[in-house]
Image (cartoon, rainbow, N blue to C red; front, side):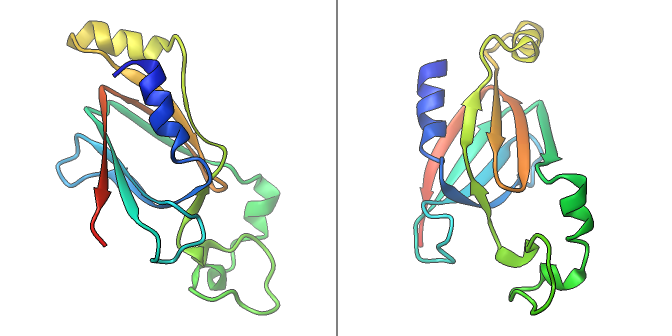
Length: 147
């Protein structure tokens, strides 16, 4: 997969809802489960983005320390927004993929892994309203999920 095709696939997730991300059970590949609308609780189709041979997965917060400080109340993790509590509402059940994903051009990390392993690797950054993900991987598989 070349960079242009990879970027095209990442463009498809911009402004969507990220329902889940993390390593799959066998711990080699990293997945994103994405809904076509960031606000669809279950009505829009789910698509699996499987980043194969993932050698690096970093996740960092997009929230400033002050926003975190205001968002520590456990009631903000529940499924309904609590009355009289301010801060970031964690219980929404998704992350808004905005601006979405970007291929890191001329990635030194990807080059190093390509040389060491003998296959092509890519680096991408994926931004949501909550987290920024950095992934280094060899291939991307996109699969619509039933339901």
